[in-house]
Every structure is written in C-alpha cells, then in structure tokens.
Image 1 (cartoon, rainbow, N blue to C red):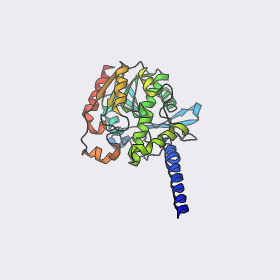
Image 2 (cartoon, rainbow, N blue to C red):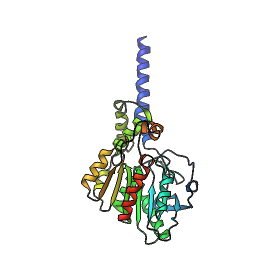
Image 3 (spheres, rainbow, N blue to C red):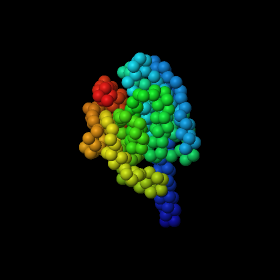
Image 4 (tube, helix red, strand yellow):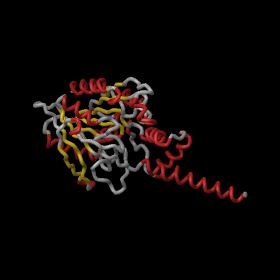
Length: 309
C-alpha cells in the first residue's frame, strides 16, 4: 500500500510539473488562431484586401484598406489588434470602430500581425508582445505612404496592439500620434491576468507557471521595459483605460501618464458586474471592452484628440 501511495504521489507531482511548468507556459507564448466571422462589408464599409511584405522576415501580412468617403481625408488610422485576435477583433468591436473613424474623415488600415489572422506565421509561431511584431508596423507604414501620401498616420491599438505600436514608435518616427485602449504595458502582470481568466485557478498555483514561462519560454519584459519605452516617447498619446480591466491593469496606464507629459489619460466609468458585455466576457471582465461599454464617450475622446492634432 505504501509503495502504491508513493507511486501515486510521484505520478501526481510529475503530472503537475508537466502541466504547470511545461504545457501552460508554452501556451502563453504561442499565438492562437481566431476565425473571422465578418468583414467591413458587414457594417456597410467598402474595403480592399492588401498584402504587405516584410522582406527581412520573409513574411507577408494581410490587411484591410478601408477608405473614407470624405473628399478631404484627415489622416490614416493604423489599427492593431490584441494578442490572439485579428483585424476583425470582435472582443474590441473593431468593425464598428472603423465605421466611426471613416465617418469622421479618416482612412483606416487594419492589420493582421504576424502569426494572426491571414498573415504568415513565423516558424515558431511565438508571441513577442510587440518586440518583433513592431517590424510589421514599419512595413505597414511604408505601404500607407503609397496609399495616402502626405497624410498623417496615427496608430490605434488595443492590448498587445498597443504594446506593438509603442515599440514601433520608439524606432520609427512616421507615426504622428497614438490612440491606445487598455494597452499592454506590463507583460508579466498581463500574463498572470490571462492565466487567471483562462483557468480560474488561484494565483498561488499559477506563480510557478509564470516563473517557468519567464525562465524557459522567453516571456518577460525586455530591457528597457514597455513602460519605460512608452515613457520616453515624444509624440501625442491618448490612453483610454477601463478601471476594472483585470488583464492590462489601470495602474500601469496611470504610471505612464504621470511620467510622460505627452499622454492624455482618460479613465472610463467602471462597468456594472451585471452588464451583458461583462457577463459574456466571463473572467476576462472589461478587458478591451471600453468601446462596447461606452461607445459615445470613447469616440468623443478619440475625435477630440484627433481634431486637436
């Protein structure tokens, strides 16, 4: 009996190690496919499918070019989705966002990052939370300059899309401004929040997984950190943040606004727990839900910011 119990204990320990120190950490840094269910045509928008080469990485990216009907376009908005989403980004409500922007006289270029949507995957299919994805932004800026020469280009991103634009803006001065909604500014905090949302397990059980992901699977803030990179940017930035976002937490956006005088920080009202959007999101809560929850308020802030530019 003792040998049986000892064998069972050893099996459980090995199983725990495989799952929490191997399987879960590896999944944190692997891009997951999200299917498309609609296109801009479903919200009455004309658009073209365009391909964007990233020659140095031997990749081709997929994007939607959504022109405004205005005879005097104001700018081009480069929209960047969050991790494991795509240019439709149903979690954020991107198609309706594009409709709002084009109605105000802005062209929109909506991009599938590498390893997402219809864009090419990398050999390892790894998420780098903006570091390598930022090269996709530079390639896209080159295309935009041919599609709409002379117009200012504003990056607009949610969650990891925000991190990607921050990394790109630090290396490429062709972005005139940024509009970031619940941006990813602290990778480890966001990953812990994501694991809690996916598994529903206590944080104490998931800390070894985060340690393993950081130690063996390449997860973790680079030097400088995203927050430090964003703090050094010298361009206008609008941050729209949900106070209860459990993934990209408000404390990091608040810190950025305190340390970068170019940041305009807007905190939307907290959403009631019984709101249909919150109920449907489950443990993801209000993450990137500001546009769904406060559409008029969000667009009011975005339109005022863009008009001021």
